[in-house]
Length: 271
Ligand SMILES: O=C(O)CCC(=O)C(=O)O
Image 1 (cartoon, rainbow, N blue to C red):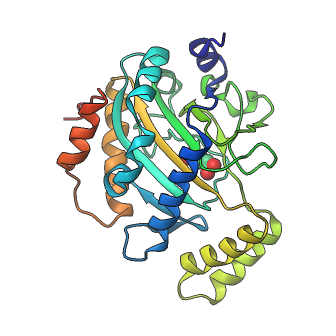
Image 2 (cartoon, helix red, strand yellow; image 1 turned 45 degrees about the vertical axis):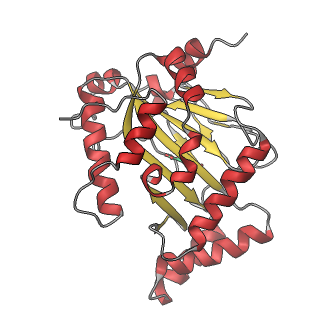
């Protein structure tokens, strides 16, 4: 029997294997591809991919990835967690090494005392297998407890399967698939020549990834235990998502609000 609570606290991440069926993931994958294929839908270009932040609002068909069973599991492992508005769906996005929590989102995060108080987590769901490639999530185990990056252990690449749900502490150092030197050269050329850099990079890598059979769709969403750090993170997340989606403010729709109530997932009170 796995001890998820202990593993999450020790290593900074856990994997709920086969949480969704392969058929469910294929359905999510089709919904995501269809959403991104329609230029009228809200999304933006980022790190060579297409991304929609706050997708629980704009792609309601995908709300089911956050369901009652998952919320119960997460509460059982972590405690009285709250919805913190942080969620994105991405298509072929690159991501180099980073922690999700930084002084951009939390004042004073360069202070080790504040770092140690963070109780913010993330769910990652990849909509394809990553058992035979390195395009899924890589992490530095234990780095969520290590303020000083000089003391990090060796990174590992997680071999996830369709249906697995990855949960990690947002202080954990992690990355997705990143550009190699050839890719970076292509990007530089596009940057020199293109009048629509984001779109042209996306189209170039889309074709390349289709040929290599490495098309990647991924879903990520945050949640947290209630404290002032989580509140600040949620407030800044809403501001960032508004900026990314060219919106002045965000008021949750009644339908998302009712959905969260139906799965017993309270929103973090950020007033
Ligand atoms: O793109 C990935 O696989 C990793 C995503 C990631 O790094 C993030 O959501 O912070």
